[in-house]
Amino acid sequence: MVFGKIRQKLNSKSSSAGTPWQRATAEAERQNKAQIKQQITINGRTHRLLEEKKAKLKPRKNLSETAKTGKRQGYLGWYSIFLVGAIGSSFLVSPYGKVKDIYVEGAEDVPEQSIIDASHITGKLTALGVVWNDEKIHAYITNTLSQVKTAEVTLRGMNDVTIHVTEHETIAYVYSGGSYYNVLENGTVADTELKVPIGNNPIITSFEMNQNLEDLLEQYMQLTDSVQNSISEIKYTGTEENPYAITVYMNDGNEVKAILPSFAEKILYYPDIVSQLGETKGTIDLEVGVYFTPFAQATEEEASASADSTTPAE
Image (cartoon, rainbow, N blue to C red; front, side, top):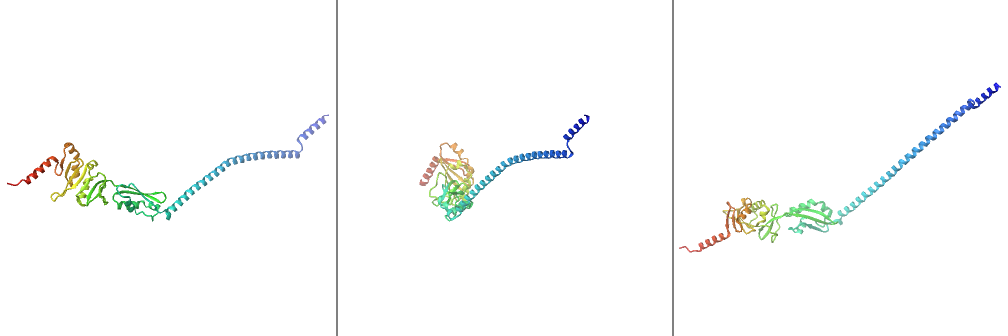
């Protein structure tokens, strides 16, 4: 009875533990299952990582394609601009791009045809070439026409050009040899002959084109605009005894006697002198000091002198 329980216990223990070979086989199977499970886990994680990476790379790929598309469009735009520019430039430098019409803007005293002639622009030149040589054309015009201060050439359409000019302001006219010549703001006298003066600028008469005229213009340039505008005429009245004498006729009816070396200095006092004279008109002598002789008194003196000269001597 006791041996039977012992045998039963041993059999039970033996059957639960198994033989060494069975235990080794079971352990191997267990490890194999663990490895397979671990491999599946690793493969799963790797798969998820790959999927995440693909998901991240996909937008980048799309972004790269968009950037490439944008670059292609940019290149196409620049190429189009370059192509249009090349075609336009080819036309302008070709015989078809030669100057057709010439326009002048800004000219008032100088004839437009004189400006065109001085520019040396002809139908044999290309419009683009004319614009490129703008400074040379400016020199042609200003050196030929002293009245022109600046000249600028711009393209007008495909074949036409426009010459934009500004002129020196005319501040007086010199009357000589039956013609009038512009005295410009820079003190030079233009070569252009005019039959009649334009505007109300002072007229300079009886001067020859010599040093006396240059001295007068030097003095005249020192006057203020208000004084210049008050002068009607400046006449040379020099003699052998007084070669620098001038007579200035004012717009208000007065006459001024002066000499060239001190003319600019003394004529500046004219507004103050006139304010003291009131409505009385006459001759203001500025040659030496300041003397005023009313026209009425001068007329009486001239009449008296004339009567004395006609009275027979006893």
